[in-house]
Image (cartoon, rainbow, N blue to C red; front, top):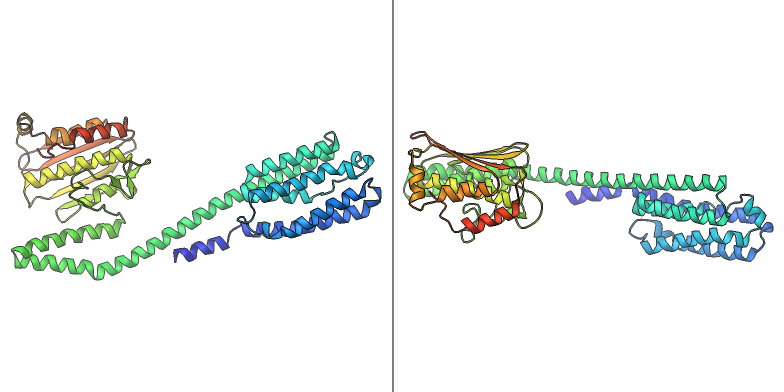
Amino acid sequence: MAKDRRERVVRMSVELPLWRALTAYRVLTLVYAIVLFGCAHGEFQRQWVAVGFFTVLSVWTLATLPRVSNAARCTKRFLGADLTIALAGILLTPVADSHARVVGGATTMPSIWTAGSVLAFAIKGGWRWAAFASSLVAVANVTERGEPSGDTVHNVILVWIASIAIGYIVEVARASERTLARALEIEAATRERERLARGIHDSVLQVLAMVQRRGAELGGESAELGRMAGEQEVALRTLVSTGLVPLARDPAEGGPEGGRGDGAGGRRTGEPGPCDLRTLLAPHAGSRVSFAEPGAPVLLEPAAAKELAAAVSAALDNVRRHAGGSARAWILVEDEPDEVIVTVRDDGPGIPAGRLAVAEGEGRLGVALSIRGRLRDLGGSAELISVPGQGTEVELKVPRNTRDGYGSAAHSARTHGGTDAHE
């Protein structure tokens, strides 16, 4: 469906009518130039030069009509040859015509056929190509007359402005067509996702919910199966509702759980350009982990997004290890103008006062290095607030423009890559 719509966009292209108009223009202006020569051929000093040029011009124009039918056939080599013939006709005019007619302001042999060559440049390459071709035509016209007369300047400026304007319009039209094609693709993808969402809601989600309920009722290994089904149901609902594509988890390579995944939203952290932090954090959502994110992408440099996601993974791992299997956790992402804030909160028993200092003294540096160290290397901060009996909250802040984002993150990965991610 998306392909059919893109084809319709191509058929509606503003370029096609322009190419057709240019084809007709070249034929009509050829006839016009020949008629002008026929009316004044007796005044030409060297008629054989003019006859030879018009013979070449006629054969060239008729033989190359398919070349100006679309942009693909109108190659740079053809444009160069076409403009060369037009310039040659202008420069041969003083050789074939009388000096009195040239000085008196008679038209050049190709006359307004030359504008068709310039317009081909405009339609093919935009206003810059048009400016280049029309400038060459201007130089040839001034050279033919010997001096910049009023009529010559008028005609040159008219061709120059018209060709540049048409070239600019073509560029704007192409940009609009690309935007329309992209919008149609997004619309088609959205409709397809809605169709799949209806099917998933009517089948897969209901089955997972039933497995979760029946597993809880049966207990034992069935309860564990039901819990896993519940987590998959939540993850699938998140995917259907937000369109975020979770990363594949590979325990051997680390992934979102281990905080060492190297991709986000289809972009690897080694590639240039920002990535969406939400795609790194979305896989954490489950039956006991709620994920709240903005509706728009949260863009960070890939290395910074990776390290921030790794810190979130470390915080969630601490929740699983110390708050117990029944504890719930919440991830909140806030996209501020100058920084990104990720808050991880749980409803566990909390951390007793002084526990972190004791853990650091015993060499268990999960919070100190895996969380605070990562954020410090990114120029951010990690604040931990815990009240016994009321759970723990970890607030992670990363500035929008991290200092040496790639280098700092790489250093952090090397420093903390093998560190125990737990308290």
